[in-house]
Image 1: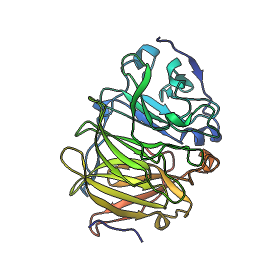
Image 2: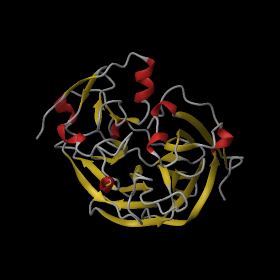
Image 3: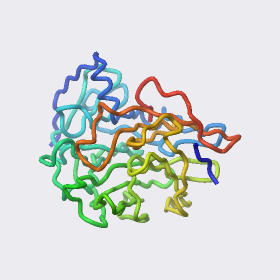
Image 4: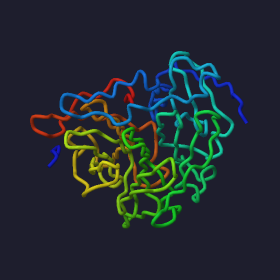
Length: 326
């Protein structure tokens, strides 16, 4: 059951969006930034609300003809790196030359200034994603569009060919200006040595961390009893949360929130991404078992849970008709 709480240059890019297959693929890792002026960020009646409502779109985008916001995508088939799309101009996109030098990418987030932070994730081989870069966060500068290494996160053990993954989740907290990252670097079949990090982007320092947790998707929520980080377990089909103090540091022990089997999830599915919209969690799930062969965008689907204030528990909700909103 669900558990309650106790060189700047433009590369022209034309992408066909008319087929169902293309739309499914684009739904893999996408959110739209429309700037702080249009972000809602209001708490639901239950007291829940997103803590990422300040995210802004990159300042360089008007120079390249963006007019309707920014869609960030790291999962376009046969295209490595990061791509930006304009939701108001179908088929229009942009990719800076520096956005491919980290290889294939996965999780991302943005801050209020429009800087974008991304993590490398290999697809079917390590040819473009060497193991030594698995725990490096990269940053796209909001003014220059250049992507450079931002921070190498400390791992309990080095990534290896049995587990080539490192950073699998990124989130931003507008209240404290913190970046959060989840990493499974160094974990093995019988050893869970992953870490959750709180990072100060102004100093590029890790200011708080939790060891011994393998997590995938993460999101920061303003909850009735205070700020919490929600994360999807990498080894079980479960969603946990952990309290954050007034500085954004981890406080207390992880708390079980949702068994995804109660939402119609399969035991092999893990929460690749978690989005919070008011009091509704939209969970993108995929089969995951620490191997490259298990990662497939074609197998992802969405589960939804709504927080019921009366019972103080997450209850199943109707699945979204399209990709989760930011």
